[in-house]
Image (cartoon, rainbow, N blue to C red):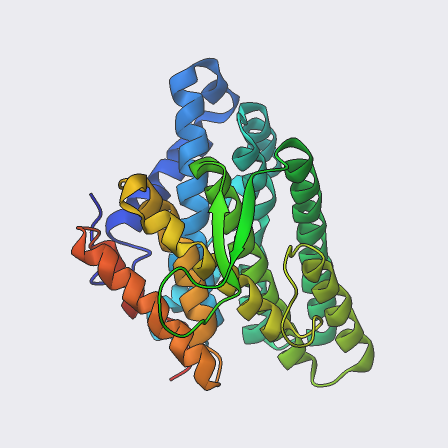
Length: 322
């Protein structure tokens, strides 16, 4: 079903397939809405296109010095963030998950520009302000999406305290969902928040202690903090703590997705949010994060044994600094 990347994943296999699909849809323009088949293709390729960028392209930009991906900084911005295609996509939306994608499509371009800012080194302070302002706009859109989702689906999910299985408790509890679509929406929502937190952590590192920039990071983080249904461990305005928190929530849903009752759909939905969680832990220094990273790798390995060979590629793909 999927090709395991053996070269930079932006150019081969599954990622290349989705890139081509996205470019084809862009070329169709508004005519894509004339048939239900084309409308459905638009929505599906938008989803896979977002995750291709966030996992195989945009997220690897977070790893400075990775020579395999140096060409990515010269690529065009993510096509679904184009205003004309954005309006077409909104007209095609059919579910609350589709509306979530409207907010997530801006994140690949945000990370793309953050990488260029780091490489350019020019007008760094103004560039950081721009990244934070755009990130807060995405965060506000995600917050509005969550409020609408909760209003429409008040019983979409709940958290069971404590682990379901014997052994040390690494996470807050275990999430249960109304259905698979609700589970997909919430885990992909948390993954988006985790990436934004990672973006803010990089901005904080680059700001070099400029007081008002630090305050901007704090404000941006508090906005993400308000999107969490659970108490955040540590300081809520610390972007690393927030990233770990949302990664924890993704992992707390892993048991739901990997249940045999979910068939193959559950693992497919979990794959890319789980990679974002694993990558967040890989870039932290404490022993607890190492154990959580091992947990993620273990889930990927189990999925690989169930025939999902792309899991092997996601285990090895990392933005951790050498």
